[in-house]
Image (cartoon, rainbow, N blue to C red; front, top):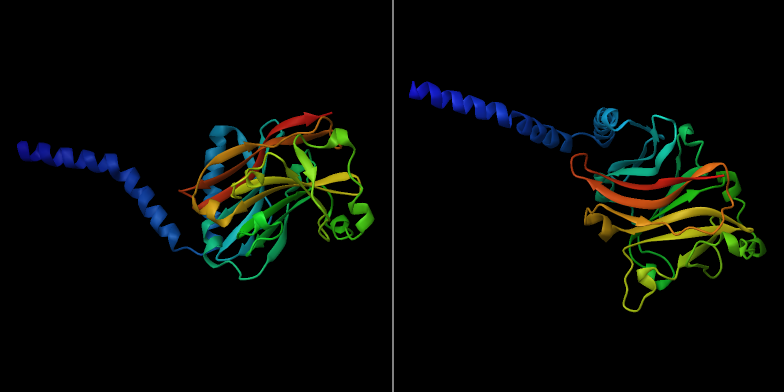
Length: 275
């Protein structure tokens, strides 16, 4: 009888730990899958989680980058309102990044039609870029409110110096010198840590303008920050008035890492409706 009880206890323990063993086995198996297959597995996991959260996430086409995959995402409530927009990037992207600057566009799913964004550009700045306090390996993520065709027409020095009206300036932001071809003029926050004495750039948030209009929002994130695998969110400073209307507009951004899915997410969220 004692022997039987011991066996019963052992069997009970096995039943208890079986789900954890299965999760561990799945995680180990995932490590050996190609990047595209890992992405498909994660999408299926997300669908199951969303049923409980009453949201649906829609993705743009996958883009191979480094040893991994990047794709845009937009999460919608069951009422059809946007909850967040951004991108997800598999951890393996960081394994084999190019030794040169690499930039590409991510198509946004058509479900994002209640947002002002047209497409997302992801840029890998292997040695950083000017000004000097951004000279660290990092990612630029531009959320454009103009089309790719309009972006390629950003070539006029005079139009680059036409600033939006003061009422549209985000709180604490000021225009930087010059502009970038096919991109626009960058705006920095006077409250950004990297502008303080002794401050360093790890993550920051910029705006961009051209020809009197704000045309993009831009989180910038260092490679070192991503490797810390944090989950943090930050406010996006807002203007007094908006140049866009009849859309949802983000007021926060989040940088997170999912240990189970082995992926990073950079999203804009906490939407408000602009009449």
